[in-house]
Image (cartoon, rainbow, N blue to C red; front, side, top):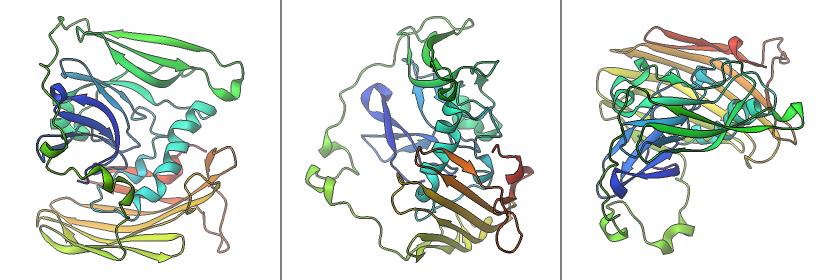
Length: 332
């Protein structure tokens, strides 16, 4: 898994940080230690997962998550776990955020949490772990940051507001209480490692000099094969799998291509196409095309029109080990 993302919180008594981004799906909550190379994925969902804020005792977390909103979570893109798709995933993440998060806050029916998770069960159980849905049952109020915990780790609080399209936006605070939990002490505090103690840290002087990976970039699979990331056109990027394997038991063949505006904050069209087959211990298929249109207000909508050949601009499916999602089931 690729290290990095948007930093959310210091954990492990100050020796680690949680981040939004990375993981094997579209975007997951991850944890990386500062005093070692240790790195793990906190959540494992199909859709656009984001922030996880740990309780002081780090046994639970409140998450910003659309996992209970399958029509808006963009989960069809996360059904098949993808590896080393460094040229393509970052090209469509902003469009998915605008669709799954900003779009729900503006007008789209659905929710983005919050969600309560048991951190250990979430990391061990993966996609089989269900968590607890804390979103508004009536769907009127939508989650907004921030969220926080009481020092005794039995209570959490977060913001919610009505949708922007309704005008006269109202806001409220919501709280949850863990009735089966007794107050507990927080994780002991440690000294946060400085740069020299962080094995993967770079000098501050290098911060503005980091360059994007030069493409094409080939990465050998631990279990065989190769994945190639390339720029095939001025605004089109591709990740190509050729018998690629992480473990020598599951193999990937096929490609995913993304055409998107060079500047992610400019209006325009993002098109995601894929034809990937997974064989071996795990089996799956990702055969789809999704066209997302963004206007000047950054409202992203699924394009359901027909192309010049009379084919739907957005169609297809993804399936993996019996789990299936269809593009047709996505909200407008």
